[in-house]
Length: 396
Image (cartoon, rainbow, N blue to C red; front, side):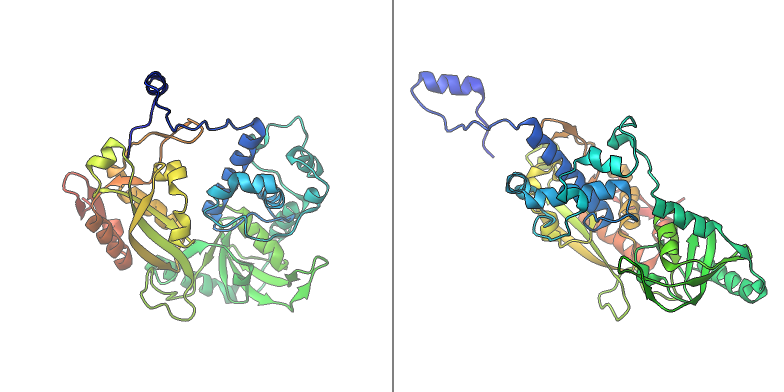
């Protein structure tokens, strides 16, 4: 990669009668900077949740704001052209409903006002949680429980489920889809195991959404005659909310997925083409390890514009397809394993802000392959990574 001309070089060339081909890059206006920053927030949401932000009273206030912003960026040619080069998640090509807030031209402050948040409250970036009326209703439904008269029927079932969890026959996984709620399923909500003993006939709400009355039994001997959507909201809002899988739900990885296997995403291992000295000196050892539910080629599109990719193009050196596993938990696990070999790199983004990417490691590819095999075998908890020996070693 050639060395960039400095202003002194340009002045010297000018004296020699040589014109440099340096082009002035126009400065961004404050409005353009806000649009770009807002789009980057939406991209971070998509990376974390695996989907675009959506409208709806049952959504978190931040998600609703991101959904409005995305609508605007899609609909305004000026905004689209400004962020098109960043759109590695294909967000601009998607179509989505335009909220009432968008139709009325409301900005974020106006949307917050409609949601009942005082303008004198802390800035949106400092808000921790704003409960809508829908969320409060869901919490009330969960709290409104009665003594289960026939709990003796269910107590042995809860005991068996706990034994199967302890033995690894069942797993707990984050709740993701309303379709997961059906008779015979188990969940963890509010710190208690919940069993959907009965499910009534599906009906349509005024908003055209499906719902049903449930009989839910809790492991503390209580029960609730709640709506399916109330249980759904409670699980979505509970950070510790989980679904309990059926026995033998399938392997962490499989080369031949069968019917019923839930595709979760892909582990990808990348090498950077960056000219940073530490990368250049260890090209075959410096790897980025990540997990995505996107096509890997789409994930790395525009890598040279993103600090997480060291502002340089990358090469894909390995991928592993995932089934029936939580992407975020697996990525955190891999990063913990190779934590002793994490690179401490500081790089500036296109605005000149210092960024420290956290997914780059000085580790050979064969060690990453070995870690994946240990995860497949479910023995990874017995090993740690030794950076001196550059290999996994038994945990002492």
